Length: 280
Image 1 (tube, rainbow, N blue to C red):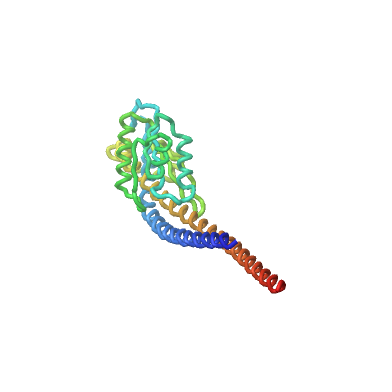
Image 2 (spheres, helix red, strand yellow):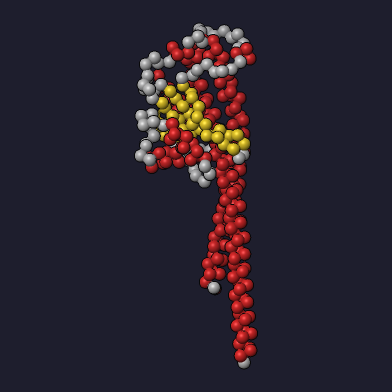
């Protein structure tokens, strides 16, 4: 019984150490989440303005298709955003599940994040382009680099569609893996009267739209990276909070088990003393 008590005591100490670690990680994730939200709020107005501008241009372009390659391979380029670090619940697995459901053998894959890259390598599907260790604060330079590679593939006719897979942040407990079509751009279902301001474009709307596409693609990727960062840190915070609660609950159960065993040992010792006294 003494050996069993010692083992239970060691388990209690181990679980308490784990609880301290997960609690510290929760605090770190909370601080990073706060910064990620601020960063997202700072850039939201920018990429919403770009999106509105493109919507205005699309309304004024008669035939959007003619600004894109007429002959292109029936292939899709996927941009998937995952994390570089783990311990963030189902954040990465949800994105990868959506990616694997849509990805075909001959499609091109741009993988952002070490976790996604390692997972695809484990499936013997090496990403065509990788962007690893991009940091906690998304960089527009990274977004622009990805955009240039994507547009190079698109305008060369090597692909005919570009899709972005990322995690949309809804609230602290809800993150939705989302797939968005980036290219080719199409007229969106919207209220034309609410958007159109009778702008005049020089030299014309088609030329301006074509020149704006790189900025549009970069801004969409940049916004998705920022929103994914919020989802990642929020998911990690939730996971660490749950792990801490489970560790605390397990500690209570083990302490109860230890106290019962200790009480049983004391009772047994008392019984042996009384039995010895009676025999004398």
